Image (cartoon, one colour):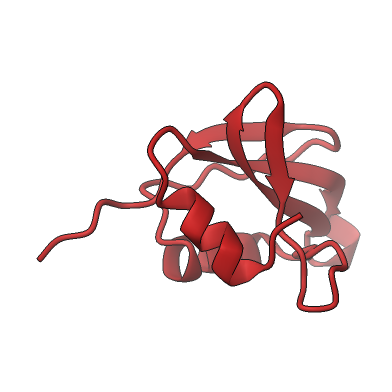
Amino acid sequence: MLREAEFIAELDKPGTWVEIECLTAPDPKRRHRGEWMFFAVRGPDERYSLVTARADDRIIQTMEGVVSFAATKLELDQVTVPLLAGGIATGMRRRPRTG
């Protein structure tokens, strides 16, 4: 489990990528609300979930929220959002720093 600043620091390490897991599929009757979690991964035995300041799982409930968080806070190079419960999108990395 990593809080946001720790999570971002982990993403800056070589070989780390992001996975987004769909916990609950988006429901068209609820304006496509679902549940997604972010993970920082460094190999088969190193998978860290993103948590809140109180160490609760940070669950994002809209696709727009997933894309916005991934693009602006995590600064990922691409964003893939799984749409089936249990689905995992993988291979996303933090954009390289310039300057």
